[in-house]
Image (cartoon, rainbow, N blue to C red; front, side, top):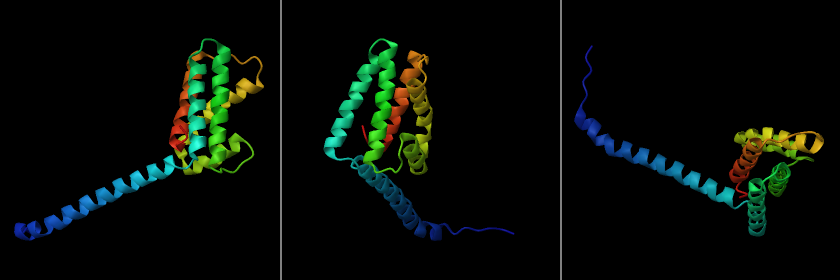
Length: 152
């Protein structure tokens, strides 16, 4: 069995195939840009500015020396994430319930759960000692989640 290819026939369809590939590529790019635009405009302008200002304050707290400042930075980052989820009308009575809901839509936000658990330990365990490196990692994780939601 031999296979013969007529290159002239293939050449005739090549522009159409290239046009289709480029069209699909452009369509995917445009859909991504539209999604990012919509994601960045979910919040009211005043809310967005307030959340960004609070985030800068959290970063200042994190850079301040002392365990108390680091603990406060994590607690404030947790509260900011809760505010962002409430602004997005995520259902639930607590941040934990809202996080469960939002993780269906944004599975990558599951990574913020461990930071929320650290916050819960800070609040509920009087003897919990917070390492500086762990505080930086937790606040960084809150920052990723807030950026993914378009809040900061």
